[in-house]
Length: 359
Image: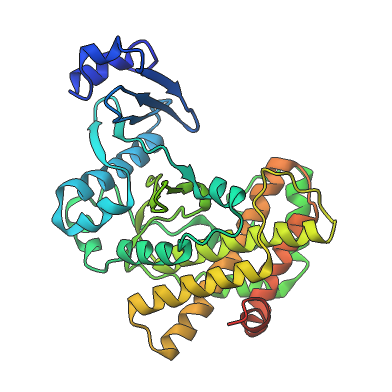
């Protein structure tokens, strides 16, 4: 059964998530919010809206990732070891294994991306919250539970970007358009880039649960300023540094947009998030110091982890340059800036730490 606005009320009846009288109430509405899945927002007069997610097609990979996400929600709701997750994700309602339908509470919140566009110098303690939330996710006791009971959903996969250096990035990437080939050639022209990426590929450690898709769009902020994480489909057992690097990566991208805009090298629409260098620095300082305090790092550990995080950030920048080029069918100043930043990190991390991050 694939859900649609006509049959979704019957599904919700059967799951005891709505009462028949709610459907005839004028406040009952169904909104399609489709992306890679079929998503529905259900509003009810009881002021308890629901978010319903179902795979669009019964493909094994899509079914597997949605089941993985549902398992995360179920564990937060039912396993005391995961109880701290309940505060950082929408409330779990149910999961239909046969029809691959996940239902959670829906929060009338904005994504952190939209919030920061509207409040570019937000003082909502955002970076501190992100650090504490990720530290809770990275609890070292939790992977054993997943490995013992839910290994089929959490395969401990290494992100593909770590394999890009093999065969000079070509394995697994589309080579059938001129812009992607041009980007390959641009990266291959600097042997230091490839050598450095090959070294980084051996730094991956499997030690904690990670979200693995941290970005501003996957972070919600409610009217009280509290952050929740959504889209747990890529959650896995892996290296916590990958999530830390994701935070650096998203701040670097917004700063790059801001720098290009201020230099009049790129027209930036109001839909693009931009940061000043000082705002980026302040937010990353707060994030890093808070996470380090939670983890109890000493000075040497802090320095070691910062360098590893920056190395992983460089890989993310390379990956992003390919994603942008594939979508836009061109290599513009933004892609060039991203690649240059990644290369600077790999070649001279000390300068990046001192001059760009002001650590």
